[in-house]
Image (cartoon, rainbow, N blue to C red; front, side, top):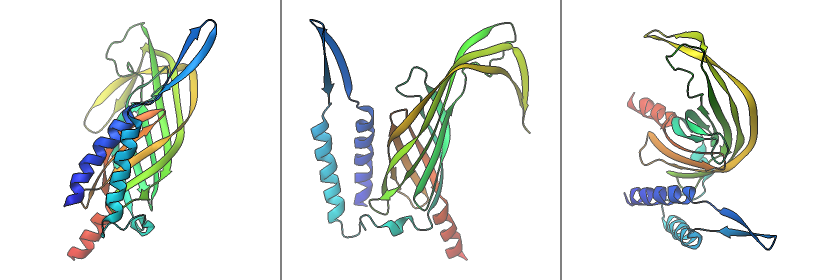
Length: 234
């Protein structure tokens, strides 16, 4: 269908938009400071967004801004990305996202790098850890396209991972050792941004989120549609 083409175009647009940032440079000239804001291709991106929304608005089957599209909707997803973005300490992490009736919640965690190191000695590694918790509401532009303003909280920490400490984590399939991480400094940040959620298939949704403290993407399953399919098969 034609919206699948716009799904790809819109996703490329969003990811490109999210990776662009406003830089503020301070230069000193004769003791005075000037701030310059650089906006990269902002007019072009806004124009593309207007054209896309105009197309959606003219699509007879679009059901634009129909909040009933969030009714009985339940999705659960897995996500990967950078947490602690734009801070001193940041790392690649993973997390989960859940939406229910349009309300969206997620978390993203990046643990200490040396926590599962196999060496046991007197070394104390410099390490850091990060996590973010976010919430928002999905606005259904159409039945297959949603955007969400997002706010949340991000914490980063710096500390030491002690190689002389040994703990054992046991699962049904295997066991592994890990070392204690003790944070000596913690930093707290207000987080805000936005996300885009695109469902090109009945049961599968792709999403990307860009905030001032994290940038990540994921894939989720639409459990409500899966339940409807099972009911219809009976």
